[in-house]
Length: 408
Image (tube, rainbow, N blue to C red):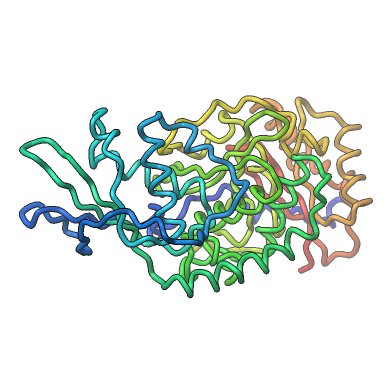
């Protein structure tokens, strides 16, 4: 009988997650700058000496085939410095001289940081860079030359060994993903692989780069996002890094992907149930994964995120590759037949939880009232024994509901 069934609202709003903790440093890498002594930055600086570009290096840690989304957003002069910094970081050169043509066209040392960040955005495989230094040469008030040098936390030999270890691990991950799969299926497979293999941990080593995910199995949002980008690049899917904040004001990182020619946002971190609100509230067992941020529009994203990217982001309006649309779990109104089909597919697929998403607030309130207030959820989700409870979580900002059975 219905009065013997238990509907637990103990996780109400639990999936409305916050951003990265304030303890997490989101900025790509610390920047150290060499300036005249009277203008030295408060951060530690590394002295660099003027030197001719050394083109004798025979190796590069950069990988082929990745998206150059950030590079393509730069103008011609910025691209000149991008290519030079990209080559220097890839081969771990000590010091290079940047081309003077961009200086003659109006660029100066203030533009270095944007270009440097763009190189890192396009190359998630760069895990060994801790920053950069530069030395500016002036004649009067005119800058006539700039020396650039990356800073690193490991030797070339150590970086090569770690890169090989990462490639070995990711080759195993990628081996289970079909090359002939659709772009949507590849994005979904990577989303799930990163979430199932990674724990959110502020104390994780290397948590600003892919080594934390692939070698350590624990990371924070930037590690999740770069690992997602790295895998999708290898699968031939356009994916880039996006940075910004969430509605709590905390820094955060996620991805922009392209599926069948349309752009979508993906936030792997917020799909991981190990990423919890850090407010000391009681935590119950959640489904290991949720799909509220798998291929979402700009409108959906901006309900909780704020984009503060180095480069312009496109307006994402397509919904065809949204998870809930693809899975038939997207509702424009309370349709009993559609709802029954959603739960039937979950049972057939062996899934223990069901999530539905609503098109608007009116639909959301209608379904919440029916399934929760009127407890119609029990007509779709069968439970056995008095010790079982149907538990649910609401994400009001993403207009989604998740239901699953727990044992008490």
